[in-house]
Length: 134
Image 1 (tube, one colour):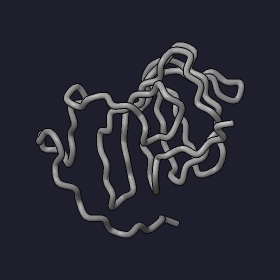
Image 2 (cartoon, rainbow, N blue to C red):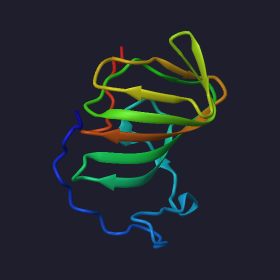
Image 3 (tube, one colour):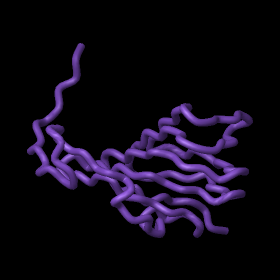
């Protein structure tokens, strides 16, 4: 049975008008620290799109070599596509083109032995991570 969703207002075009609803040239967006994610220092993000009506934030996340992302939760779900590098998680090695979906249940830890970059879309709430800092 198909799911029904409440209608949302369309966004105004953001950066470049090329006949699409939204087109962003990533090189024109600055890297920023990743404080909004609430994770250990070292990450950088490029916010590509935010849509408050949908509760969605799309971003590129850059991980430094040797980065460790602890087991965590967040109020949003996220879809993550690995673009560069590899992630070690749950005894598996994921590489460019692999996909991860996380919900509001604990997941991770993730290890980035070579660093890397992911496209991540958070939907349904804040992308801020909660984790045990002990």
